[in-house]
Image 1 (tube, rainbow, N blue to C red):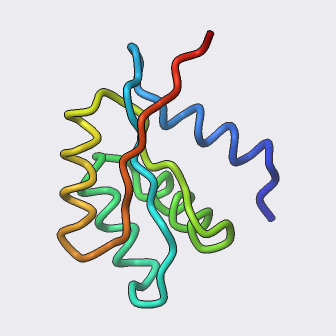
Image 2: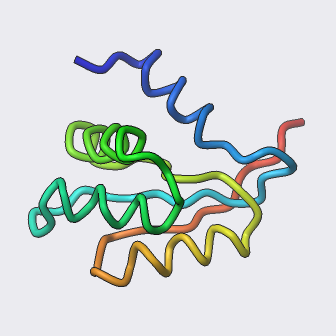
Length: 98
C-alpha cells in the first residue's frame, strides 16, 4: 500500500533541478493497460521501468499523478509523447513559492 509519504517522495524524485515552470499530470482511464502506460512513461521521460511502474500505480489508485515538473518546453515534449497513445494528460503551471 502506498502512503502519502511515498507519494511525496516520488513527487520529489520527479522534480527536475532548476526553476520548474510547469508539471505534467497523467490521469487514470479505463482504456490503457498498465504495460502501455509504463512503456509510454519510460519513452516520454527516460525513466526506469520501476519508476514508471510506480507512476502507473499512483495513477491507478489516486486517479492522477505528476509525471514530471520542469520547464514548460520539457513538459510540452513529455505531454506530446504521452498523448501519442491517447493518454489523458494536462500541463499546469507551477505556483511560485512566496
